[in-house]
Image (cartoon, rainbow, N blue to C red):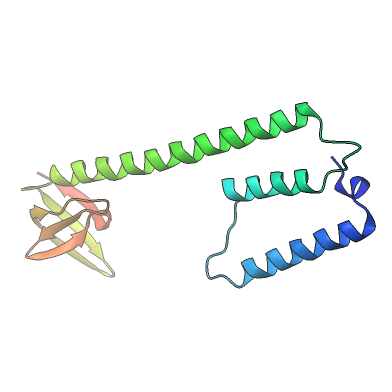
Length: 144
């Protein structure tokens, strides 16, 4: 759908001004968005409906296709979140299995070696080696 053919010149100018203001507000935030999320998709859909030509409304097929895309996007987002939670749980279980095993941990330019004495649980597990806690992700080698 070509927006420029369905909007009058004043409406197109107003829409361009809103888009520019929205883009400037994004540039002022500390976190840059590289991908569109479901909220952006819904905002675009609402803007399309708001500025459509009443004499030529959006076809049902287009609207249904966009709603299906929105539903798919929402399901993928939910699935991604669930996979992140599953990954964190698996990482915690793997960390628990290291108790009593010798590990090598890379911390900057140095290597710390020793048996795992304790493990913390949670999304970011830590292992205690030689009386100090280190991130599970810093482990480079595990031996019996």
